[in-house]
Length: 381
Image 1 (cartoon, rainbow, N blue to C red):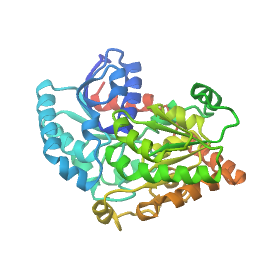
Image 2: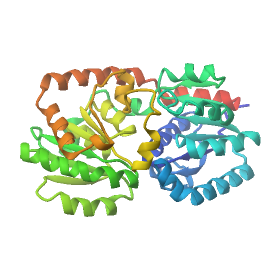
Image 3: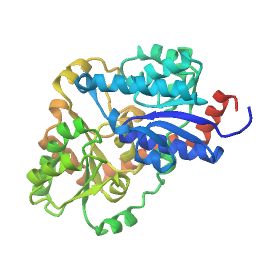
Image 4: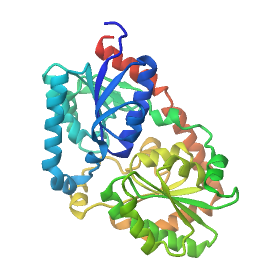
């Protein structure tokens, strides 16, 4: 087949998937300028010309409880999307993360003769290793973000390529701290803490309040601190009442999006576990990782983890580079204590920044080019 531009179906859930998919689409357009992409996506993907049949916010769900509450709508969307993709027959389908939604869809499309590619290997090395069998059934090829993942998949008979992480290419090795601060009206000598309580509504409900309480405790210890809180699209109406109630006296600025600008500008961050922890590491920002979820979700997950770490910087380092405060440990007092500890230990601060730089170099692989090469091979292009 020639290098004629293909038409691809994509599904990306929530803000992190939207970001990863947008960077992938941007890279694919360098190879195929007339590329057409359609399916489920968010504003970043749409800015790259993606045709969104449903918004990615429809998939912004975490945990068993949230999934059960929304299962009817999710299954309906997946069925309708599958029908439309089977009718339109794209050259391939790329499922970006969202494995619980995408694997079933990919399996259906693959059985109907459509090539399927899954971008972002599920954390089978961390928990739920049995999902490798679902991957083998669903995907013709897996694009892996981390270097140790292809070997695990190859052992299960799954074709896979390490493509690095697109964020490592998109984020500068030296973060633009001065420019970001100037854009926010912050001074060079200001002490700035970024609060990142997550991009899902359920995360905000469990994590934002402890973070705001922690910010108050940090301000009491260091009144000069300034706080910035980037708000994911569609979540301001949820966060604003919390800030009005708990942010009194805080020197706190809410930002519409601009999470990367916030990470470039801050000194440290309190951050919800997930892709944002890797983003913080790529911006070389020491962090305190926080996570809370519904008690039933926590009970089901407890004991299933294969690793002692949950945040990506710690998983890559194979040690606790940064503190993780999960579930009952995620208290305002603990968050404040660990956050202040970073500000009070310059040697530790510099040491972890050096480790983050090493991780950045490891993940910087020109992901768009490597991924497009792998996708072209799957297409036979």
